[in-house]
Image (cartoon, rainbow over all chains, first blue to last red; front, side, top):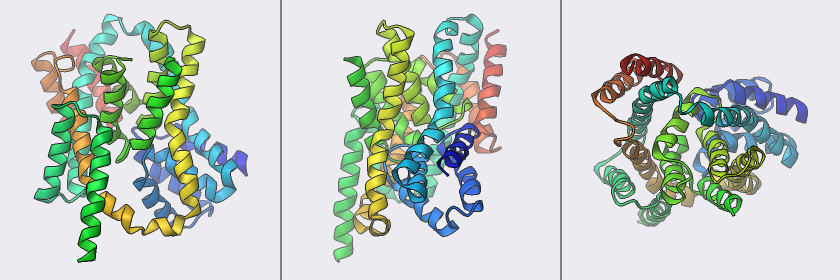
Length: 176
Length: 183
């Protein structure tokens, strides 16, 4: 069972290009369709994994592994999900430091860099839409961005303050 | 020494990385570029570009790449640099491990916890800000060298936003665009 889990998560880790959320449909197909976990349980796990810090794909792999085979299962699933990208990036790191100075590589990366920024702007807009920003929450988002960008404040403080602020406001509202 | 720093830095990234890979970027950037100077901002942008083209989550990719590069740039041999890679990748996953195992235990109580819900009323808008900060920080002179950069940015934005092209395809096209425009 652990071996099957490992191979399944290796496959999931290998075929998801473009971030953790791209893994979701694949994970769902592999584990729900095999009957390892029900669709409802998967949605619950998804919601909780999303609210935890850290890498989402890793979180959900650990959750699933633990559900299925305890601590050994969670280790095996996380290892499987990480291993493909680890190996590929390590190979690139070994190789890239040598070709970085190449004129052609430099030209390609001159084109890539502005495109990367665009690839971050789009999910920012999508996240803003799905968060359903009101003018108050939009103010929080703007303040967070400006404090990091212009004032150079560490995102760690922003996260701590935002979570604490949310706790205080949210709990006060419920009391009323 | 550098190994301890890597370990501690990536523990922090794993512990405070709320809101997904893109929101994590400004946190990673702050730690590895601003605080420790392990890689330059251009190199960081390159890592993000590489992450978009290769499988796996951006958090793992960056840990693996930066773990290697930081140790390599400090003047160590390849073997030790690979150790750096392993340490950073292990460290970024460690907080997840501990948290998930604890929460699995109390799963049903955590699911509809009002404290967690309340904290997220603040965290959700903040992570939009974190993503915006990541984009703003990368809009610098090193990444936008001339008007051609803005052309590529505009084209990539429209193709992703309006035509929903896959990021891998965008990176591929931008690479070709770079080759042609800077021939």
